[in-house]
Amino acid sequence: GSFQVDLGTLTLVGPKPLQQDKTCISGQTCLLTGLFGEAADGFSANGKVLVLDTCGVPSAVHRFPGAGLDALAGVQLPDNEIRPGSTASVGGIVNQLGVGTVHWSSALVTAPAGQYRLCWCALPGFRNATSNSSSINCELSPDFEVDFGELHLYGPIVMQSRTCVSGHVCALDGVLGYGLGASDRFLVLETCGVDQVVDKFVRSGLVEQVSGSGSRISWGSDFVTAFGGSYRLCWCSQGATCSTSETFSFDFGELSLIGPTTTDQTCVSGQTCRVDGLQGLYLGEDNSYMMLDTCGAATTLPRAPSAGFAWDDAGRGIAYWGSAPLTLSGGMYQLCWCAALAMDSFNTTGSSGQLNISNGCKLAEQHRVTVGTLTVIGTSPLQQDR
Image (cartoon, rainbow, N blue to C red):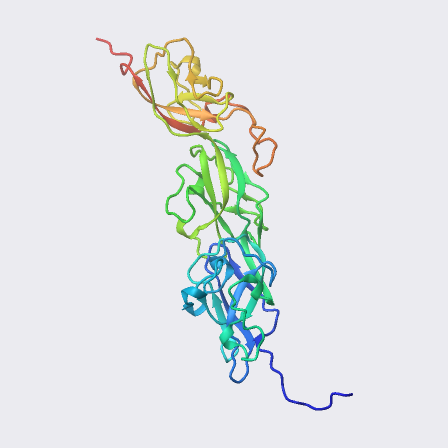
C-alpha cells in the first residue's frame, strides 16, 4: 500500500468502552462509579457528563438534577461562563489512571423512569491546544456528542392518577414504571417524604401486596375508611430501606379517594333531624348516611327515625331523616357514610368504567366511614322514673 511510514500512535482521549451501562433509582441520589476512559501523557479524560434522551441533541431531561449535568468535584465556573440551562458545577469522568466517578450532588432524581443516554464532553482545558473545538465549553446539550452508555432509571412513571372509594377495598391496576418489582413498596401520604401518615387508611397507607412486575398494588381485603380527598402515591425502591415515611420521597401521582370529609353535627331530641354542610370528594345523591353507635357495626339504633338511614338530598351535602321527630336519648353518636352505587367516571386504572361497588347501602355494616360525631341534645337516659 501507499501508507507505509508509521509516524507514531494516535491516542483518542475519552470514555472507553462506549457501552458503560449504569443504573440509578428514582427518588434517590445518583452516583455512577467504575467509569473508564483512555488517557495519554499530558492529557486526562476529564470532562462533563450529561444525561440526555439522545446525545448531541438540544434538549434536557426534566426533573433530573442540574438538568442532567454532573456535579463531580463541585468545581465552580466563573459566573460569566454560566449559560442559561446549564449548571455551575462541573467535574471529570475519569482521572489519569482511567477510573472515575460521576454524581449529581445531594439532589434527588425525580425524572420519569426509563432509559437515558450518558453523554460526554471534553473540558476545554484538557483538549489539545491545536484542537479546532475550542469554542465548545460543555455548557449546552449539543456539546455532548459522545455517547458512552445507557443510564437505567428505575421507578414508576410520574403523574399517574388512580381512584378508590372510602368504605371499600382499594387496589390499583396498571401501575406504569420501569424496573418495578414485587419487593418495591408503595405508601399513600398527603405529601411524599413527610412523616405524617393518613389517618384510617389500611395499614397507615402502606401497600403489602405487590405483583411480580410491580404493576398491581393492593391493600388486601381490609376496607379503607380514610376521609375523602386527594392524596399522593409515594414509592420506595426494593433496594432501599423503606422503614419510615421519609424514605418514600418519590411522588408518582395522585390517589383520589371518594368519600366525605370530617364534620361534627348536632340534632335535638323531640325534633326532626337534618344536617347541612356535609362535604367531601365526589359525593353523590345515591350515597347514604346512618346514625350509629359505631360505624360499620351491624347494630342499629332502635329509636332512630327510618332505622337511622338518611339519603343525601340530591347530592347537596344534606342528610335528612324525614318528618318523624328524633326520639333518641341525649348523647354522642357516630354519623356514618356509604357509597351506594357504581360511579361511571372512575375506576382503579384511572380510565372510564365502573368501580366494583356492590350490594348498595342497605345494611348498617356497609356504613363503615365515620364522618364525625352526631350530638343529640336531650335527656339521658329516657327512662328516669321518680
